[in-house]
Image 1 (cartoon, rainbow, N blue to C red):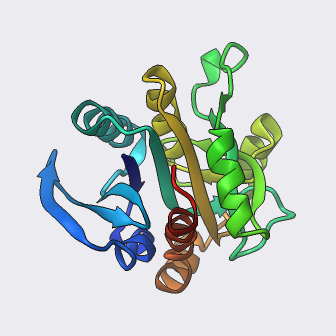
Image 2: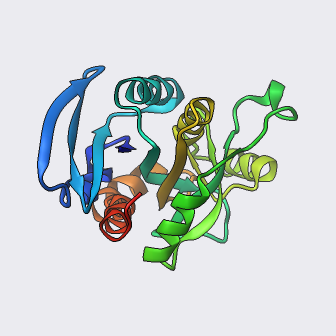
Length: 217
């Protein structure tokens, strides 16, 4: 079983399109899920993981109920490495909670599944590999963007990946997040996201679907 999640429906639609046959529709913690096959892989698709608390809660519920071997999180994120540009796709190699400052020196960065990184890189050779930072704030200022990059050296920032990575690590489930840059994490980022969401957000889940069509995990 492979669980694929996102924050918004637009971010997981690339995988929804390739799910056939559909074996089950249901609900978990008031979020809809769909179970079916992509290639020869049994897959569960869920969206509605918003922020670190909800993401961790949902990740644990999905692991307890469906016992996945792999957990993949897809969607959009903000740029904090100034070398990145809108539309760049990053597969996280490690995950950092940037807003736990009092523990910052003690936190170990959680590593991504090497198997998933290799399979994703195999089907999309333009993917950028690097850290992803997460926190319960929407980053829309140069000051905050600079601070987070200086502390984490992450490529992108979101509000969910590191929380899911932590839950998966504690449960011995292999995890990775694949994110597309939707905004520059500065003033006006909300407008950038609105402009780019429908056009760009489905790409990470489409890459995951292509990977599952090609590889049996």
